[in-house]
Length: 417
Image 1 (cartoon, rainbow, N blue to C red):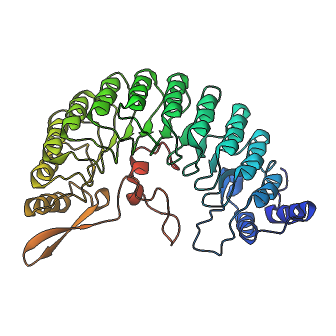
Image 2 (cartoon, one colour; image 1 turned 90 degrees about the horizontal axis):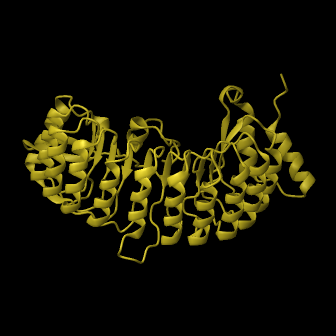
Image 3 (cartoon, rainbow, N blue to C red; image 1 turned 45 degrees about the horizontal axis):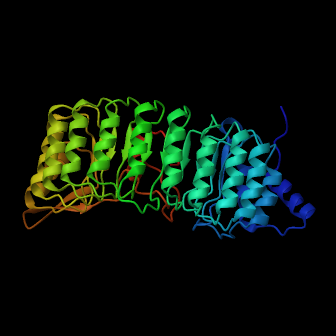
């Protein structure tokens, strides 16, 4: 068996050879990795996140990344690299692209919230034409724009290894969303994709129509995030029409759109017949009592597949919330429900208190907790949700349980997405 390389010593020598001062944070992470005896068995993710609050952080620059990537190409037990929230630019993306072309062990790469633009995105996307190892890529928050999105659309036509891709909050436009949807019609490897918050200026919902067409033909996609797409009832209807023909999608995220009670009618009808969907996130829409009641009817009488539902901040009051609680009494598959941000009355508080007290709803499977004052039941908020910790982790370190990111416990398709 080969001798395990000393990452820290290799890094020190590389800094000397390249005439680059050591980054104290990188040195600390590598020293800790050298002490980890488990990396031989399952590999390790080097967490060099620039927003780490537990240790002194010196954010990674392009020159720092050049040194780091010179150390790692032949290090077979480094399978993940977390470089989020640093100060990498297109120059750093060039170093990363070269690394991806040479490396054959890296499976997870997190570049979220750096300063990578269109030209850097092109280099990374082109590197993935050849790379046959990387499975997870997170570009969240880099302003790659419409052109950058087009490079990824081209990559998806060639790459057959990437399974999880996060392009949320990347300022992508209509053209590249349509191109990505078209590429996913033929791509058989991508299981989860995040397309949150594009920059759309049309009211015609062309992108939703193309995504719906993709869903009719795609049989591999399991998780789809479409937050902040300005989606209205017309778009929801198109998606539902497509999902009648789709038998793979398990997680649909439609949060922060403009879906009303009329749009929820299509979703309710879909749930009556769908046997695949496990997680439905409708947070921050406006389904109101009528929409909640329609969902309740479908869940109580027909659907036995959905495991999690979020209706957070949907202007739902007692009538709709009590209907949802009643649906849970007959539907034993629905185990996770999130309701905070709606209009609670005493009937709502009593109904959910009873669900929790009887054990029908576990305390870690909802975002409310009952308490009593002067004989009246109230609900307090809990830090639980489908993706409560998406852009950040608590200052005390990584989340150790799944309550704050329940989607991982239900359908762990994309641990990092």
